[in-house]
Length: 424
Image (cartoon, rainbow, N blue to C red; front, side, top):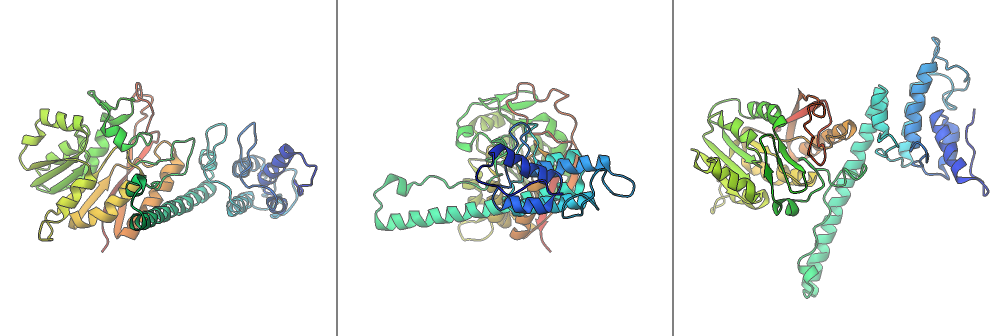
């Protein structure tokens, strides 16, 4: 059965979109291949927002409901190439792969705010979900590498300009290059952050006023900087990073002081804290952190502080740590990657461990799973092994945790706690 035909000059564009969607939904590979010669693999239905990927995945669920005991779908008698006979899920897998090979976008949203991966997860289609996760990983790794290339190209242009005609203010102080980021889902991931809310940038955050509450810190736009529900996560993290008394500890980002308090319970022999926000620093003074034994507070951005910690004046190692934790606010994933590629290697002692707040894409399961794999690849490339511990997260919305907060930065049932160490 062929469900679509090639475009002709008088074809109705809306009808053509439906041809592509119908071919994808029926897993009609023969017709779909023909259509993709002249049509985009990312067309969308104006009513449902379905792309061909959505249609292919939803069609699998429809076919499963109609499946007979002998494996033949009611009312269809084709073969795998036409999408009628045989293993319908395998036909769906081949359809999804064909669409991805032809440029289908892994994280397009339908009108129900679902990516194709979200739809596959909801329908319990594990194989298709995993394919979508892998597609997301490929797309994000490529995007990150392209951004790196653009940054290098921009730096080359600046160097050339400086040499030839250093007369322009813009040439001497170029705009920052775009950071590697989660490609946009409803604008939420145009700047994927390891931290709470990817929308504010760090200069804006550092100049903003903060409000301190018993259960949260909010910036001037009601973005949540840190919340007390994270205590269970921080407690488990500190126990894994510093399981024995007397560790040498470095924490980047104090916030509410949750994990620093957990580290203090291990009686650290030295405890360095890097914090950049003036209001948090003032509160740390009020709470006595500056006066605690073996605690050293570094005021400033970690990008400026850590180079001083890594080397002393004679070039010898100055500070090594057994446990390092990274939890900043309003920084993109590229900042975390810079941290472990350029700084952890000079700060972590042999046998030491480090971790970070894993909030990458945490308002959508497929994005969370994609970025777990992306960070694994980047950590491996930088010389680190990483292990993941699953921690159950309660229903935060039902508990009212997001009341008064601009945006919920966590919507998942499970937190994947990362602990990394040098390979070997």
